[in-house]
Amino acid sequence: MAPSSPIAIIAGVGPGTGAAMARKFALTYPVVLMARNPDNYNSLVDEINGNKTGPASAMGISTDVSDAESVKSAFGKIEEKFGKEAKVAAAVFNVGGRFIRKPFATLTLEEFESGWEANGRGAFLFAHSLLPFLLSCTTTLVHPPTLIFTGATASLKGSAQCSSFATGKHALRALAQSLAREYGPQGVHVAHAIIDGVIDIPRTREWKVEGVDGKLSAEAVSEMFSFTLT
Image (spheres, rainbow, N blue to C red):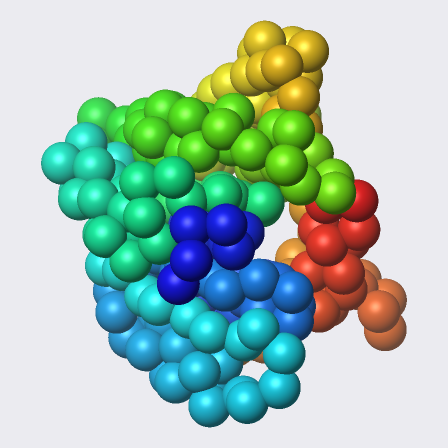
């Protein structure tokens, strides 16, 4: 792959929003898919690589975003494939982390820290490795290189028995705001998307919600993210 070909990176690929974004972005860019468990992206990589129309191509990298060495290794593999001067047009930090709902009095320290590890520490490590790639192509792309963080209702309010998840998502929003103010003037678009609802994915199929259209479509979310890139 020539270094001049822009790519997209998605961290946190699963059967819902991450997969929908991968399919959408692959219509325009080669995509790099990150998840801790390769089972989350293997079939999707095969699907995209099997599409012979357009620029569709994908590579998957097993990555624990909360581990500094794992993130460093992942970006090293990106450099190996696309070159040290790789141009990243779009990146999405779509890591959810463990969703723990339990009374605070019974919450363990490990459970509480899991929210921060994924959304605070993980977002920092991902952005820290990614931003040099975005900065290197601020004048060579049609649209500004973009980093989107996937937030949730918990990014704005902490619900009862959700202190771990809410703490992590609050940290994610704060990081996104700080990066937007620092890197926006340098030509990098940083956005924080609040997904205010339950996304319709296999894991949530049995969840009860109000209204016929009470769940969000992963495809609709991916359309919104794609629009944000322009």
